[in-house]
Length: 309
Ligand SMILES: NC(=O)c1ccc[n+]([C@@H]2O[C@H](COP(=O)([O-])OP(=O)(O)OC[C@H]3O[C@@H](n4cnc5c(N)ncnc54)[C@H](O)[C@@H]3O)[C@@H](O)[C@H]2O)c1
Image (tube, rainbow, N blue to C red; front, side, top):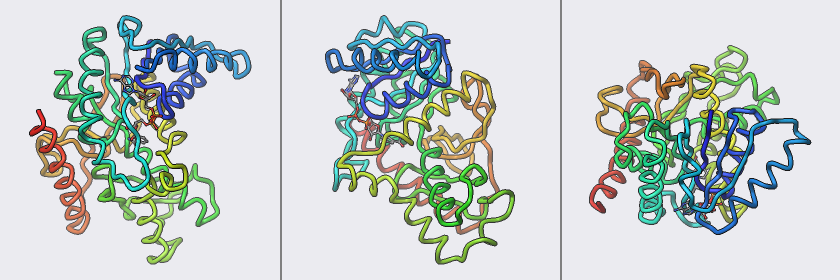
């Protein structure tokens, strides 16, 4: 098994490190455009192998795609992160150019790879990678839902003073302020969350989740990386270990939920072929309305990308 992570910045390096510590592949390649950057990060990580006791071999390269040849899974994290005051959509022009050229290079050397996109604006960058790659849509998808759900679960665990391990939740829609948390599908050790927390507090947590990325950008001056990197690695794990995990994933819809030709977050089964199945929940009217509003916001940005082309 071989994994490539494009972009050795905060998110890419964290993702590669988690993949190595979980021994998800014999070979992990980290690639960045900045001279020596990926080499340095990879060397540092490899020197943790004797401490953290793993065998995955990590190497770093500067823009040398021959080193990525025959990768099974490629994670794209290259691109600018948000700075305070920026929305994810502000990154579209710069990051679309990066994601397009990176995808062309990936496909040249790994025509059968599964591609997981992390770069923002997430839904549109996933669309960009899909169109550029010419791959089956089941093999090109984006990471956002696991992160957004993790933020929601972490806030709930703090609020209820319980283990985050016991919180199950699903979140849909685009990766932005219009994301759609679904309290009806949130449980704590099997107990509906609505029985454990009053409506106002739950709504406050949902609002905090929607703006959870921005909260960190304000604190750090750049976007988050520990949780995003770990979330991307969890998707890699589901694929390389054929776990058939059920996760919210940014996926290409072809009529599911009444939406067509759009990348948006929905629950899926993730396994060795990528998206093995899209799970269709029976949403109520209010949930549908929120999902359609979120999809409309994504579609607007997809049109911006199409017009740029
Ligand atoms: N989907 C999500 O939930 C989520 C979460 C956090 C961050 N992000 C996004 O992930 C991306 C990376 O964030 P980060 O914090 O790691 O940023 P970063 O600046 O730390 O790292 C980005 C890296 O990409 C590299 N790069 C730029 N152009 C490249 C190219 N053409 N080829 C190879 N490498 C190239 C840069 O040199 C840099 O090292 C951003 O777009 C950010 O918005 C997404």
